[in-house]
Amino acid sequence: MAQRILHEAPFLTISYNYTDEWLYLDWHGKLDDEVVMDGAIKLLELLQQEHCTKILNDNTRVSGLWADAAKWGGDVFFPQLYAAGCRYFSWVHSPERYSQLSAELAMQQTNAGIIFMAFDDLGPAAEWLRSM
Image 1 (cartoon, one colour):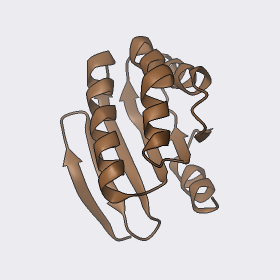
Image 2 (tube, one colour):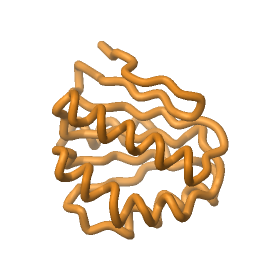
Image 3 (cartoon, helix red, strand yellow):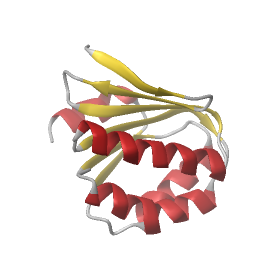
Image 4 (tube, one colour):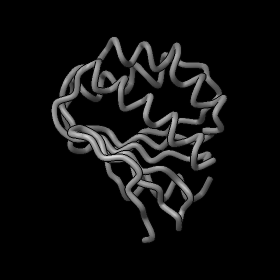
């Protein structure tokens, strides 16, 4: 898989997958509102830079509750992401329940126009995104 790291931070690595033409977000650690919002803003910048329409958002190594960032994501961030060209967002849930709840809140909160699908495993999440 031809992939290039575009951004590396303590809680988030963002790569561009040239084979599938999507941004891959690998979140890790205990997240909070500030970390999630900072990562989201970086994602928006990179999506505009790479001109892609798909995001594979991997939360399998994440814990923490970030409900305020989830609300902000739904109200503010996802509409900006849509305006920047994102159309498909494949979200792999954290095994940790509080993080799952935050993710679900973010997806339910928005009417941005992005098609979201949530998964428990990376494989099916990637397959769905490839089919779009």
